[in-house]
Image (cartoon, rainbow, N blue to C red; front, side, top):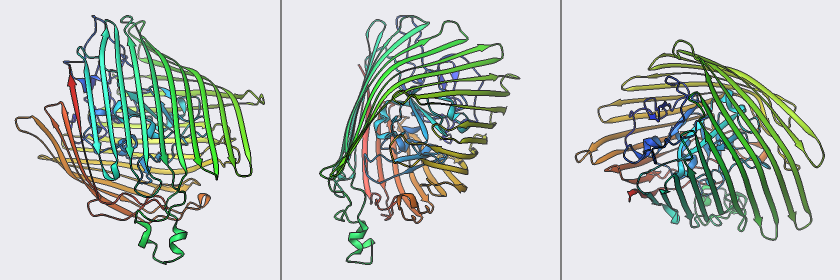
Length: 634
């Protein structure tokens, strides 16, 4: 499946989904329409995405059409192994990569990591309520239809907590007249492999069943680095009427990965002054030979889509989640983090004349347990919380959506039931989108909000412009954030102080003949940040050849990608040394055959650069990865 435009790595301006236009750029918004977004037609095609028994299915809407979107149509033509790699298509992102499959890496967006980013799955908050962290290995990449990255001034609006960044994973919601299935398999170095199977079918009149099963694994490279995960998602959709659809879903995750703590450099330096002698050797000593990280989840959800009249959309969710994370270091220590959450989330949109009102509400009851034991102590902490939040957005569409100003407000609260202590927070902001021409857009937004469980206020500002011509795509985003921190619920763990920072992201793409140049870069400056684990500057650029060959039976994209990571400062709180600049070059080939099968081939790190992004976790050496995805009907 070819891209709508060879340059639009983040812009899907002309991608039609149902009757709503969605763009892959917070600056590129087409005329407004209030209908639900069908985020699956672009993948399934008109021949299989159809009405069932004369009913018109209802689909979820994104949080806001002002968001940036990374669509499945885009990332299917990229080299990705797991979900965080998909964010390479967003310029203001950085993956703090350990270089080990399955390791719970931190993804930075707008300068904040998983601890300061609210992650949602189909509109439901997905972070661990104890730690605030989300392990992105637990998000099925093949079940994602699109990724919504909310503009930073609006990020605090959604979910029970106020965050500086927000991401919504919109999963597939497909309806096929005939049974549909898809299988993907890839294999790489050290036995790394993934197999994913998807099945979708109308099983009885108004009932649609969808199942996705994933297994990923990796053998040992350095000691204690093996990994395995099973991930199962099942969804049953009932098309009650043209006005009401019901969906019930269940998700199960079970994973186990070694946490070796990186290479033990003290052991190396004890007998040689040249660290590189053994650092990049798989037999190098590591800090933990037996420490493991285990994750298990059971997630249940019932969802109702309602469209009682043409200008109103309702999305109501009731859910129950059980998360359990364990860090096990035999004989030495043991840590358990358990979440049991019951909650409801409601989203309502109403269009009246030229104005739109959007209301979001959340309620959660959570039982949290933290257990820590070692050879000397055993400590167990149990918490019970009630959390609520309500937010509203008022938008006006002037001059046929030429100018769209919005004002928004949120109130949220938390009560610890054991102690009776409670706290509340408020936030508000405004933004404006200006659509001057079809190919020139402007955006500005500002918000100020109280941070949860801290005494401070944070402010977010974002401005941007984009220009889109036939052979040129240019997008610039500027952002500024003041005084953002995240309080931990874990005893004796310091807050995550993301502080104040300014940054800029640039996308510059150009096409000529069958060649595409695609570049992204970001820079961060004036940092007052105690949790600064990303480079001040980073750049990625690719030169690709694209063409349709053999009577349009092969849609080919192939080329070289160059990555540059600037210096990372020392992080004294975790006693991490500074990281020198590094780079690598990859070769990739993606070929789609007759719109049903896709072959992947990657020659990673072809110059065999020796580097690391986190001390001391060496990145993968020169290696080959290949795979295939195949779609079937009937």
